[in-house]
Structure formats: structure tokens, C-alpha cells
Amino acid sequence: MALKTVKLGSLSVSQLIIGGNPFSGFSHQGPQRDREMREYYTPERIKATWREAESLGINTCIARGDQHIIGLLHEYRAAGGKIQWIAQTASEASTALEGVKWALAASPVACFIHGGVTMYLLAQGQGHLLQEAVQAIKDAGLPAGIASHQPASFAWAEEYLNCDFYMCSYYDPARRDQNPRYDPRSNERFREEDRQAMVETIQKLKRPVIHYKVLAAGRHDPRSAFQFVAKTMRAGDAVCVGFFTKDKPDMIREDIELLEQSLRARRL
Image (cartoon, rainbow, N blue to C red; front, side, top):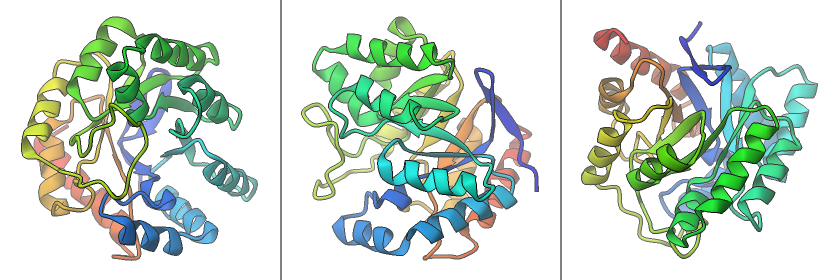
């Protein structure tokens, strides 16, 4: 199986990218579901999921630049795994730049600033720290980007950053203006008005976009969700989806087929 690829700067990535939230126990469905994901995704299951994704034509994963993921990637590569890693900076790093340095030390193929960090720094009037972090990625010769849940972040980035791609969340579940990190106890909201605002913004952006949280953290039916994504994606865009295969062992194959069917219907 060979998925279509798109370009992020000079980097060629599959149009469907496997996300890392389930591997790190970030369900966005509450503490019990977080714990279930952490218990299920042992190191061997994570590596097996990467292998399955590769066998189905996915050539890229997005996962955190922390010691847990970095260690697993080293093991996976040593065993012959080829999947490309786009690093998401770890929000627990003391600064955005430190998060970049953690990730770069483990040889990703691209790197972006965590969405919570982006929103927090902009809310605190510290956009210059984002500029510093993005420039460090570019100085390392890698495609650089930012993630965010808020359209205003990308309007700012278009003017003040030199990104190669953007990570655009369809939803803005919880405020990150005072704390950049995910809080599993927060009452997260997945509102249609947020999705509409983001997809309208995407159409205006000058850089390739990786669409994420497209399933509203498992709240949407996959068929209708991918049909919506196909109507929103531009020719050079990709989509990132996390898979919790405990719920459905054939989930990766099914989601690839749903995305491809939806894109064919639109001829994208």
C-alpha cells in the first residue's frame, strides 16, 4: 500500500501521519482513559504499531521529544524501522528552546513547537521566544513549524515567523494562557464553532498544514470526520491521527481507507 505524499519544505511525508498522543496517554477523554492508554501501549506495542503503520504506507509519525519516545525510537531504528519522526517539543521543558534542543538531539526529520507552548507564549507576550525556538530548528537544517488550537496563532505566525509548516487543531478544548501543559482533569470542550473558525483560517495560510484533532479525540464517527477533512484539506496538506488499536485492531487500515475514499471523491 502506498499513500500519497506531500512536502513540508524539502521533506516528503505521507498524507496520513500517525500521531503519538495515545502512546503517551493523552486521550483528551479523562484520567481513566489516559491510564488505559498508558497501560495498553507497552514499549513493544508502540513499536508494533509503528511497524504496522509502515506496512500500510504511513512513512511518518508525530510524537513528543521526551525520553520515553526518544528511547523507543532508538530501539525501533536499531531493529530496522524506517518511519520518519517529526518531533513535537515537550511542554515540560523549561523553555521552548530547551524543548527544541531535547528533540534535535534525537535526530528528527522536522520539529514543531507544542501547541500549548505556542498559545501560552503568545498570551504572555513572549512571541520572541517562539521566534528563537523556530530559528533554532531552521539553523539545524530541518523543516520548522508551530502547533496551536487557535486561529490567531497562525495569523501572528504568518507575519512574524518563517515556518515551513503549521499544525492546526480543529478544536480548542481548554485554555493554555496560564499553563502550556495538558490537564486531564480539565473540562475540555470540542465546539463546532472552533472547528469552523480553524478550517476557515487554514484556507488563507501560505504554508502546508497538518490537520489534527480531526476526530475530536474520538468523539466523531471516523467516516464523517474524514469526509469533512477531505473537504477542508488543500492539495499540499496532510492529516495526523492517533490510533488506539485496543478499541479496534484494524483501525489503522480502516482509517487509511476512509481518508483515501474521501479524497478520491473530491479528487484531491
